[in-house]
Length: 226
Image (cartoon, rainbow, N blue to C red):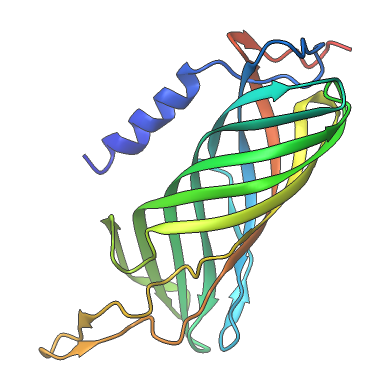
């Protein structure tokens, strides 16, 4: 089940029609777009050394686009995203954490709907799977993942802005208004005592991503088309 769910979600996202930004848009007809993103993320940590995390997979999005004119439109849809951060607890201990999130974005687009434009909006994400890896002196000592874990806040609220570029690519910046961890989470320390392992770790994720198009509706994106 743990390995099958991401594979199933990947299949569903690839099944839906996907994206092209350079073909002429009929403003009267909504259209489906899909693609992926390469994410460079970090956490807003005050008391720990923060390291940029690169996550090229698995990040997928399927969007319904409603272009009301050649200069304005809006979109919504669904996303499946691998997002997290890396931090040092001490000089010898490093932790790498991430969530698989399922999201619902809604946003506005301004500019040339058949070329370059700016966009921005809000996204609600739900944390499906939490993974934590611990390294001591660069050697991995521990690893676990939990479905629907209470270690993190299930609902994650985020704002994003970006610019769409020619040939179906775009650059996006995103900030999570919700703290990554549930700081009230309690776990046993191995001696029968309950502790709060994430107390004091107030981390809001910020990332910059490169987004690229794969399909529009049922057709593969044509990178050679003007």
